Structure formats: C-alpha cells, structure tokens
Amino acid sequence: MAWLRSLGRWRHALMQAINRPRSAQATVVILCAWLTVAAHWPLWRALQRLDGYDGPALALFIVFVPLVFAVLVLLFALTAWPRGMKPLWLLLLALAAVGQYFALHYGTVIDKGMVLNVLQTDLRESRDLFNPRLLVQVCLVAGVPALWLWRLPVIRYGIWQNIARTLVLILAALTCIAAVALPNFRQLAPVVRSNMTLRYMINPLNSVAAVYSATLKPMLQRPRPFVSITAAAALGETYSAGHAQKPPLMVIVVGETSRGDHYGINGYPRDTTPELARLAVLSWRNATACGTSTRESLPCMFSHLDKAGFEERTAEYDNLLDVLQAAGLAVLWVDNQAGCKDVCRRVPTVFTSDMVDTPAGQQLCAQGECLDAMLLEGLDARLAALPESRRRNGIVIVLHQMGSHGPAYFKRSAAPFKPFLPECASNALASCSQEQLINVYDNSIRYTDHVLARTIEWLTQHASAYQVGMLFVSDHGESLGEGGLYLHGLPYAVAPAAQKSIAMIAWPGTLAARTQVHLPCVQGTLDTAVSHDNFYHTVLGLLDVRSPTYLSALDVLHTCRSTARSAT
Image 1 (cartoon, rainbow, N blue to C red):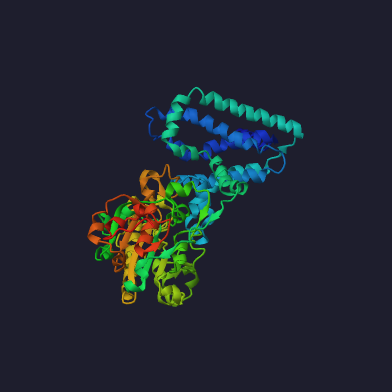
Image 2: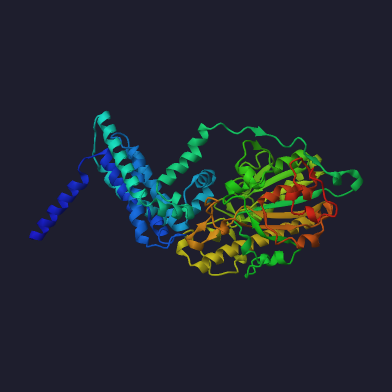
C-alpha cells in the first residue's frame, strides 16, 4: 500500500500549494492566467479564421496569449488590494463566464449597445436567453476558481508596500505588452483592422468597458438639451373642406427581427408569405436598418434625422409620432414588445401584456407573452376611445410586434402557421441543426404574413369611413448561424448584412390616392436601395402632413406622385 501513502502525500502537498496564503498581486496573476485559458475560447476560435491573414494560426496564438494575459493583469491590478476584493473578483469571473457563453453560443460580443439592450429588456425576453447550458458555463468558468478564491487567505501588507507591489505588477504587464506587440506591430495592425470584432473579445475587459460606457459615463456627461420640432406641423391641403376626402386611417406595423431576404414576396425560395402574395402590396427588396438592435433602430427610424445625423446629434428631438399628433391626427401605440424605447412616451399607449386575462388573451397569450395577433384584439374599441376631434382629422395606429424575436423563435408562431418542420424547439440555438433553425425562423415570418394580412382585412372593414393604408417596417435583421453568428446586436460597423436586412412592405389601399401616388410607378422602384432614413419622410408624405423637417428626397413615394410636393 505504499502507492496509497504516496498518493496521500501528493494530495496533501497539492492542497497545501493550492490553499497557502498569497498576496493580492499573486492572486490577480493566477486569476488572469485562468481567464486567459478558460474564458477566451471565442477569441482562440476566431484566430483560426481571420480575414486578411494567411499565415499559420499557431503564430497568432503565440502573440495573442501573452498579450491577453498581460492586458488582463493590467485590469485586475487595479483591484490588487488585500481587503474587500473577493466579491469584485467573483463578479469579474461571473462576467467573463456569461460573456463567453453568449459569444460561443450566439456569436455576440459584449459592447455598450448590448449592455443597454439588456438593461432595457423585460423579464419575458430575458427568460428566453437562460437555459441549463448557461448555468454549466458559469459553474465551469467562474465556479471552479470561485471555490478556490473564497477559501484563499490573502496576505495583508501595509498600504505603501501593497502599492509598490502593484506598481511592479503593472510595470511587468506593460513590459510584456511592449515586448510582444512592438516587434509584431506591422503584422498585427492589419489583422486587427480587418477583424474589428477582436477588439471586443478580451474577456471580461469588454464587459467592464461596456458597463462603464452604458452606465457611468453618461452620468459624467452633460445631458443633451431637448429641441421641439412640432411647432410648424400642420395638416396639408387634402384635409381642407374643398377636397372632401375621407380622413386617413393608417396602420404602421413595426416588425421585430424580420429579415427581408426571408420573405417569399421578395424572391425567397420558400413561400413564407402566401397571404401577402394574394394582396396588392409593395415590397422593397433592398431595405436596410439604422441599427442592429431595437434600442438603436426604433428611435432612429422615427427620427427626422438620417442615421449619421441621429448618431451625431447634439440635442434630443420630437419624433414622427409627436409631429403627427401636433398636426392634429389621433395617434395610438399598441405594444407586444418590451416597450417603445421612449418613442411613444408622449402618445396614448397600450400593452398586450395588460390583456392576458381577457378571453382573447387566454387563447393568444402564455406566461405573460402574447402572439402578435393579440395586437388586433379590441382595436375597434381603442380606436373609438381616441379623441373625436382628432379622429375627424385622421388616425395613425402603430402596432409593435414581437415578430421573429429570438432565441425562442418557436414561441412566435401558432401551430396552424408552422409549415416548415422539423423546427428548433429550444432557445439553445447551437444545439439545433441549421435546417431546424431556418424552419423555425421561417415559421415566424409565415405568422407575421398572417398578422399583416389580418391587419389589412381589418383596415378594409373601415374603408367606408376612412382612406386606409398600411406600412410594415422591421427594426433590424437577424443572424441565423451564418459564420457562427446568431441573433443580432453586433456593432454596426462589424455586423453582417443579415443583421441589417429588413422587410419594408406597404399596402397602399385607398390612402395612396390622397396624395396621387401612381402605383405602377412605385412598382418600378422596388429594387431601389432604401433604409430607415426614408421612413419618417415617407409617412409624412403619405399622410400629407406638412413640416419643415420633411425632405422630399427621402420620401420613397415622392417621385411617383402626379403632382410632386414641395419640400415644405
């Protein structure tokens, strides 16, 4: 039994080595070494398939491993204090574990936009992102070092001695970075420029920087002043008594995560839109979003500014709904999402989540989450409840869909609207085959097709009293496993086209006649590149609402009007 005694001695020595007291600086070095190995699998995977680099992957590993380790040491050195740091170290470990999970399984990166998306989402959406795989990832990456860390005695030096040891640690990290980066700068610089996502893959530095930019940094900045643009908003000539036209009733449907290239009416090989195909709709086949998340796109598309102007704005402004309301129209926002990102804050708003206990809600809702058909339930009563003085002028109703929101795509369509099987019935998308993933996403598009057709049917029922029309515009696209990417929300500069592709569909109904839109002319423009930049101005033009902010050049219908409107 000598080997048992030897094994016991080895185990005792190992436990002594693991549990012996260490300085805060030594603890930091060990944690950084662990994170370099255990929390950077997305980075190591990315290094094997970089654009603009045809050398051996091993050469990149030799450079990036010490660089990542040294950068992490610089970050953690700021926490190298003997007292009260264990909770912070545990938090950083947890951030690293969660960040790696989403990067591995969805191809997402943690940046300011992603943090803001998380802060602004609701419990329904957050619930869909959690599954047992996330728990396993956190236990492996954060739980293992957490057990060691919690039992570890940290040596307490005097304050000046501790500062001196930390400065030595920082100097050593800087020396390592210089020794590795400077000789390889000419080779590294073009690789990093061609692969911008690498900047977001040092974990948890990316999460720390993102949380700071999303939460603390705005507190240190002066808030933007509010500038109103509604003072000159007015109804156009078609509302005068001399024209004797019916008031407009326009429904704007804001889609969610709806890629235009998965619509049958746009040339997609699958018939995902059989109901719209039977209706006289106009679908722009080359439409792009202002952002890659609802938080970015929704305020941008309802703004009078284009994408560049919105991102560089120095003030906050009224949006499209404010202008329509100021002109005298009745406006209503109906939400089946996690909110309107402040777009609807000054207009009447209702949420489908408040209707789950109604008879319709019991059929269309489950666990506080409703199918998009719920947006149309009770709409007649809501229309009648709007101020009569405004209803006489016209009505604009915005329906904010749940659409194709992932990763739980299977929840977005009802059983009769699932023609593509088998579908992915999990929120762990990487566990599904590509066929199952495409099927479940296409089923959500098929259900949106049905909801839009029902919306048009509802509008037709009101055509005797109103000039009716519908405009459907999605907020952003979605990655469906292409290049290992899933969902959406990547920084716009590095996001693939799939996350920017959107559907933009109009049913002109009888509303197009209000401003003499020549529909055959519009048919000839459907391959033209359009974007969210056009949304604000197209709606104003279609409703004949006058505003100094209206730009005819951005109104996609302007060139097809019999009498072109002036820019004012």
